[in-house]
Amino acid sequence: MTNAKKAAPAAKPVSTPKPPKKLVPRPAPERAVAAPVDEIPPVAAPTATLPATAAATARARPPRKPSREDETVARHQKVLADALVKAQAINYDQPKVMKQPAPLGKKAAKHEKPAKAKKPKLVRDGYAMPEAEFARIGELKKRLAALGHEVKKSELLRGGIALLAALGDAELKAVMGRVERIKTGRPAK
Image 1 (cartoon, rainbow, N blue to C red):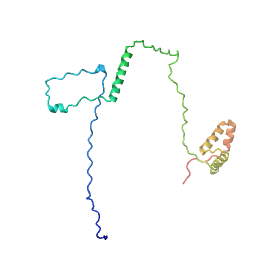
Image 2 (image 1 turned 180 degrees about the vertical axis):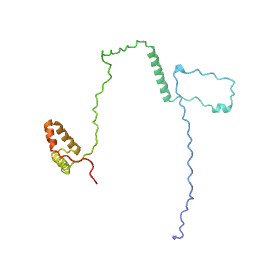
Image 3 (image 1 turned 90 degrees about the vertical axis):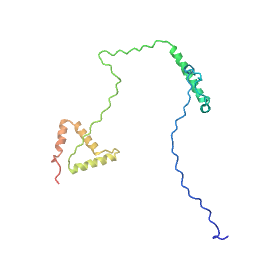
Image 4 (image 1 turned 120 degrees about the vertical axis):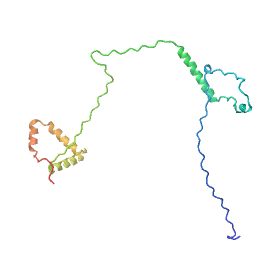
């Protein structure tokens, strides 16, 4: 056989896929929960006035045998009903709850929570200083970093304020006398 004589396999016709079926919700099957024996209503005797046709009897289902789950539920309900009857049969005096008298002269305090330490409100402010003193801030930061204690510029300034506040009046006046007064305000452009 030559290549020309070989027949290609027959191609199957391409069929379009069927659209999916619409999903229709079904109601959940009802479970017959066995009621306690005391609560089962009496079943009425069948009356002779109903027409007995072959179609009606064919549709009627035979009574369903209860499943193991239904039997367990019925057993548990019976045990709970018996326990409730026994609990209601017991008569006893309710314990009397005595209120604690309030301390005289003071209002009755509820649980006192420990006071939370309020964080101080931070204030942002701008300031001007000579370049030489500003450079000293950088030097002090490097010096403290070499000692193993890195600080921010604001922490360094707050430390200086704490030292000034600890000085006596005469020492404070002497230190502030050495500080040069500068013209305040924004620099000219």
